[in-house]
Image 1 (cartoon, rainbow, N blue to C red):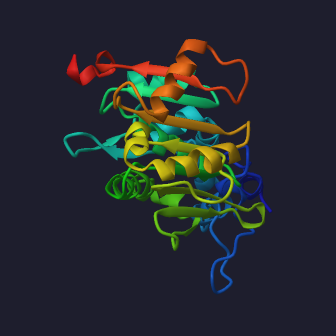
Image 2 (cartoon, rainbow, N blue to C red; image 1 turned 60 degrees about the vertical axis):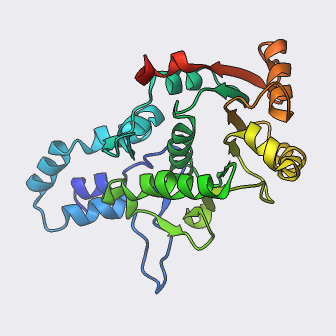
Length: 287
């Protein structure tokens, strides 16, 4: 085995925590090995002379790209695409509100906000990144109604996944048999998933994000009981819960939770809620 071939075979797992670099043991239907970063590079280099291999590796900055893929902030700013308010396909870049929230978040977050600040979009991209680059992570987004749930999954989660570069997409074995769910197989390391529902699902989730919770409290109080008593307590202390909503008046479960957290100030334990307030002045498009 020549030096260049050894270099390819010894490519480290780009995520540092599992992820698509750990797929060589993953087998597709029919017994064909699932693609991996190593096998992808091996195919690219097949048939090249040693000089051509060295030139290709250098020109494509393979070492640099592997380092970049270990950096979550780089991945968030470079791998994912969305549609903006005008329907244009653009690379996802966090706005001022999203950056501020991510720099000040806690394990349990209550977000009172004005409309169209991008919290759900940010959660989708961040959550998709987490399940793609970490095995055994399950993320649930709870929408306030069926239409919103379908839109979040189809226009945000599935859209972002389908627009990822093909050479990354082909490294994953994906199970989408369950409604509004993407499940990524990590072979003998397990799997990760991201799902959307309109109420709490059974099971334990590493992260839960709830949209328009005040509206959910007002219209579907029985669902709220399931979420409060079932879904939320099942999230581990090392996990994360984000509950966002626009205002629905000075009453209701969300109002009480938010005001209690706001009056307490900074939380002192992982299970305490932190209140975040983003009014219209955070919407740069409106300024």
